[in-house]
Amino acid sequence: MSGVIVSPYSSEWPNLFCAVRAELLPVFAPTVIEVEHIGSTSVPGLAAKPVIDVLLGAHSLLDIESKISPLNELGYQYVSKYERELPMRRYFVKSSAASLRIHLHAVQLDSKLWQDHLTFRDALRTDPNLRARYQSLKLHLAQVFSDDKSAYTAAKDPFIQSVLTAAIQSENVGQSLSG
Image 1 (cartoon, rainbow, N blue to C red):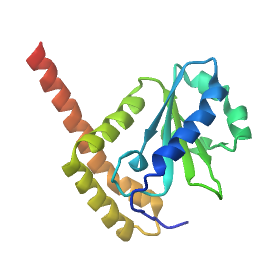
Image 2: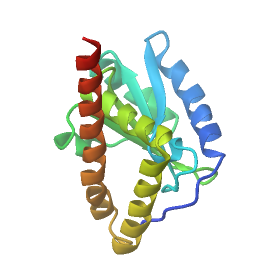
Image 3: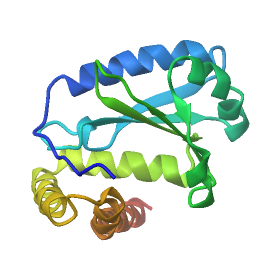
């Protein structure tokens, strides 16, 4: 198993995402999809594993599944083994010697998984304290679990869940104040 590497933020990451987005849109045309940059590479200033995480939202998983072959032709390898854990996601990986690895998380648009990814990303983008705490945690966990990516990912989950819970509570307070 390869090690966990957390790199300083690179201003190239958004450009790489834009290239990926431009590559994906024609594959799904004329089907309406949304493509978002998620994960730590989507948060300016945040150290990250050198992976561009992409969230693709379609109206149904069937819309996504119908494009497995064309995605494969572009180098996106469909990885079905994680569907036991996350049956509402279709997962693809693209590796390239020339650029960073790409993880494509394809889900139903506006599903809980869609919303959670965007909520967490947006919380990190808007709160410098939260971003600093998350970066500190990631750097620490990268040392502790340097040879175990699964354990590294699992150890971040309580932090992520606490951010999502706080966002839901904040949203509920906002709704009750305006209602």
